[in-house]
Structures are given as structure tokens and as C-alpha cells.
Image (cartoon, rainbow, N blue to C red; front, side, top):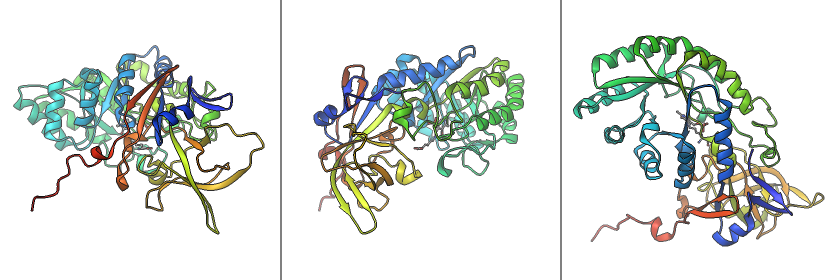
Length: 431
Ligand code: LLP
């Protein structure tokens, strides 16, 4: 459930009027709902009541310090993939011993920092990485806790770029090779087996693939438990959210995509819990999008309208540098006006495009929308995950500002970047 709704014809985030936020802070502007994030976190935790579990929020989805702080206060752990994310988590008050460190390309210095900080686990993606971690740990007279990421070879995920659980992906270690890595770890030294991990993809909107992957992992998990005494099984992230009709569906105690009502949060939990409970292990989850996706919107103002013989264009002040999902994954985000249109307001089919000099710079294509005029404020829904986190300054466009709303409280949680910051660190060689 999320807390974006029209109140007296004005789109609000919790008790804050989005048009007022745009006037105050300018656009493009990311706005997040603290209540929504908390609601999602608590709902997921409740759905897993009865199973010893730790929710390790996937920081990559939205790494704003305020979001990390909020989740740390809820008791969340964190799934990190870089030294930068570790830095952010610690700075926001997150606990290193609740962090799992994933990713296929950890550098020596990242490993050293994570070891010194005392992360819960290194999620190992290759034999070479296992050797490197062992070497670093031994050099420091330490023992590095690790879990191998096993690839269950299950196809799932909303787009080929975000499917990770198939054997042709770069992620994880082939299922059959995993026991050998634990044996190798024992002979290498400096390593302590603490768990095993899997992750099959992102934006998965049915329960089947999760259950199938867990089922495939069970014999392996049991064996690692017996032979190496592991304490946790991380089932990764990947639970999909509603992008279509996200505004309408937010009011319901209902999860998933309305067009494919395959997955509810309860359904997800119900499909994996019976398989997991008998293990008696701690179950780790690494949700990113599920917690923050529908908790954020991107506000953008219409600059111009333009018509070609073939198309209508609504040109807005947010571009692919602010939200790259439509361009990169054909991601579909609902776009709604901040002023609720009358039921009989004229509608049109248009492309909503940004100012960036690329044909791929669109937020929506061939979209039926209430006709929008210059000056109108639009909200791009479900932009809380992989929105700002993937933003760039392409075309020398400063990064957008971010606001966190909590009830009637509004905090600017990231200032808009200014042009001096845009060039910080750049130098013209002396002549
Ligand atoms: N755990 C691992 C090991 C991951 O690789 C990921 C996401 C997650 C957890 C969190 O997945 P989530 O619960 O958010 O689906 N930028 C893409 C999504 C990339 C996901 C990468 N890995 C998008 O905008 O759709």
C-alpha cells in the first residue's frame, strides 16, 4: 500500500501537497513517502513472522541517507554492492554486522574495508573472489564470513537486463560447483562459512519462480548446513511491484501488478515460507524495489508541447538522466497530473519526453494522458526504486533534489546539485 492520493483534487504524498513541494524545491524533484517505506517493510516482516529472518534492504535501489536511516531504525540489515554503499550505510547509522556484501567485482580495498567494518557476510560470486577474500583476511589475521551465491538456473525477471538467475548470467556460481567452493574455502583458510545465497532477478511478478528456485536450492542448503554449519540462507530480492495503475492500486491492501495479479506479498511469503521453515536457518531477504519502488515519485513540469505529423510530444523538465528506466529497460511508469483532471477532461496520446539530446530520452511513449499544457506539473509514479539511484549528470544536468515526507513533516533530504558541484574536481591542465 502506498500513500500517494488525490485530496481535494490535489495530488498528495501523505499530508503534503506535491504542487507545493514543486513550487518550493523546484523540478525535477524526487519525493518519497516515509510511511509507505515503513508500511512495506513491516508488512514483509509480518508476512514472514514465524520464520527467523533478516530483511537486508538492497541499497542500490535507493541509497539516500534518509531512506537508509529510516530502514536502519526499523531494524533492517542492508545488502550492499560497493565500498560506497558500505560508507553510506555506516554513515546513516546502519550496522555493519547486518550488512551482506554482494557483487561480482569486489576490489581488494573494498574487501579490506568491509572486513574491518565487520560485515555479516561476503556473498561470493566466483572462485577467484573467494581466493582474494581469503588472502586479504589472512594478511590481516582475520577470518572473513562468507556465503556463496548459487545460481539456481531459474528464468525470471521483468527484462533481460534484470534477469540474473539463469546460468548464462554473470552472477553466482553454478549450483553443482558450490560444494567444492566451500571445501576449497576450508583449505584456503581465513574464511568462515556462514550462509548461502541466491537471487534470480528483479521485477518478478509471480510466485512460481521464487518457489522453484528455493526448491532447487534445498538439497544444497541442507548439505551445507550439515557439512559446514552455515547459519543463514539468503533468498535474494526481486519481488515485483505495481507499475500499471499504481496510483489506484496503492489504496488497496494488495500487491503486484493489476494486469498480472500473480503476486501478492502474502502470496510470495506463503509460497516460500513452508519450504524454508523446516530448515531452521535464519532466512535473509534482499528486497529493494518492493520496499521503495512505489514509495517515490518524480515530479516534473511541462515546458512545451510540440506536434509532428506523426506524433504529439509533451516536453518536460525531467529527462533520461533523472530516470533512465524507460530508456534502458522499456520501463513503464504511470504519469499523472498533480491537479486531478475532471472526469470529462480531454485526453490525448503523446510521448512524454525530456530535454536530453537523445531519441531515447522519453519517460513514456504513445501514452494516453489527460492533455497537458506548459506549466502543468506531472508525477511519474513508482520512481522510488532505481530512479535517483541511477541518475546521472548527462548533458551537464545537475542531479535532482530529493524530499522525504513523513505525515505532515517534509524534509529536503538532498539538495539540488548546483553547477559548481557539477564540475567539482575537474581541471584544465596548466599550459
Ligand atoms: N539482491 C541482489 C543480489 C541483486 O542483484 C538485486 C538487484 C537485489 C537483491 C534487489 O532486487 P529488487 O528486490 O530490487 O528487485 N535497475 C533495474 C533493477 C536492477 C536490479 C539489480 N539487482 C531496474 O530499474 O529495474
